[in-house]
Length: 313
Image 1 (spheres, rainbow, N blue to C red):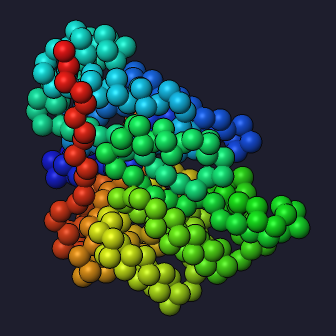
Image 2 (cartoon, helix red, strand yellow):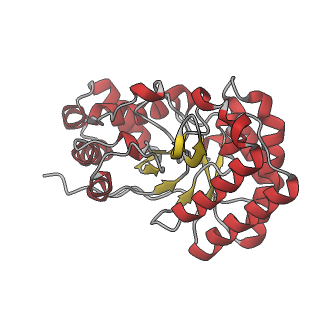
């Protein structure tokens, strides 16, 4: 990564809590101030992305998360003031970590904390109140589950359609029906409070695209909601760098070129997210994203301003 322009593209989609485990073994994971701070440290050490938001899945939310977020916001405030000793103490990191982040903030880098509110049926009870207490800078609304009716699963089972463990169900449900269920679910989900519509093309993760005419209708439906509600639409770059998905790159680039062109014409904001699940993936695929943005005449992308925490005494 050697382009200064690429470095300035904000990355709004990153998962400090890491990679998903096997579906049956996934459990809520608690934030710690150290976990969050080090997610930002890795970007600060590289010097990019210069705007970065962490946005873990709501199904991983725990009762400890809000306090961890408050604490790391205090640590970032201290780092912004140059008090690296108290920063390190507050975030439970080494002074060297605190110094790197303090220098980055002093040089104009900015860090935010959001949430990806998906429709995972395993989301803990009370997660919404935890998120409210957390006061996220931005909410990405996404869909990873759709209700299906199959003899093997029972009626109304929520199928994690983008999970490789359950990809074979595409053969039983069919591509067109999968997309129809996805779009109807997404349109319902984005009625709830949110700022960004996440990874619109996720049902195509394994190469399953609906007929072109129907896909364009789906794009227009979602774009119209984004325009009416002033929501940003995410250009998600995971397919562009994930080695298990790069065979989809050209189809994904072509689809996003069309989507960005439509968004530009309608005045719909664009946000860019790497969907990183490890620090090394922050900002990955942004060279291609920049080329698409330039081609479509989009010279401004969305990034939420981080909230200021309570004054540090």
